[in-house]
Length: 113
Image (cartoon, rainbow, N blue to C red; front, side):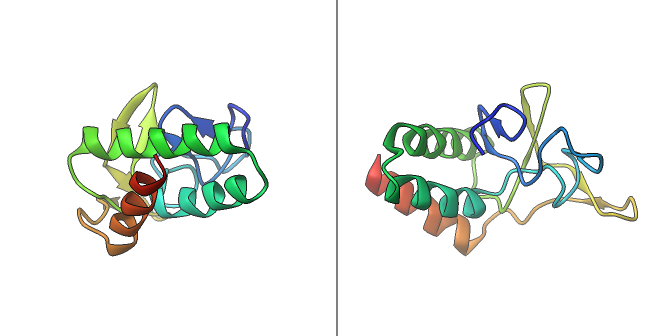
């Protein structure tokens, strides 16, 4: 979970870039979801991986600050954040701009930062 194939400077991906169906523009096969990262951070904290948890918290908060809104998910391609995604059938998709679970994640991360 903490290797470069899934952990980026902007957060944990939903899928490793070593997997055959990895696609960073896919809604679920490589995008970064702040709320999913919250689960991992909570587990890392619980098992005393404080430095790793802190890095992920900071990366998600930084990403959301750059994006300017608590989006439900985002992409990272070639080191650049993005919002344009696509569905499995190739339809363009843009994440919800304000999601309650992302706002909750932000508050939790800010509280522990």
